[in-house]
Length: 83
Image (cartoon, rainbow, N blue to C red; front, side):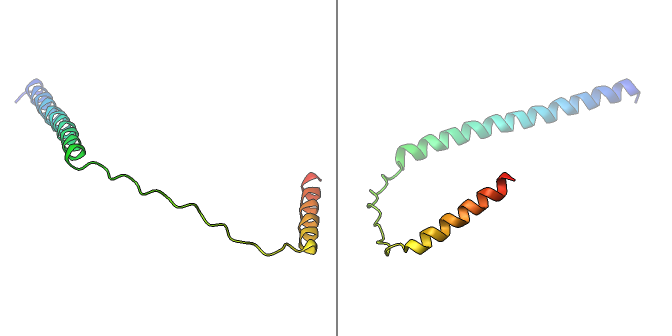
């Protein structure tokens, strides 16, 4: 075999391989689309159940000392970030 014959055979194999992959992918898309339509038609999604309103937990009274401590910590943190 000459180099041109080998090159032509390689090109033929490449075209055959790429063509078969392309056809497979096209068939995969078509079959997936058809399956999606069939499942959507015969098995529609169930309607979601209405959600109940979330219950609020009653929090105990917030201590004024705790609020002062949190405020002091926040102001100290902000003053450190500025410098």
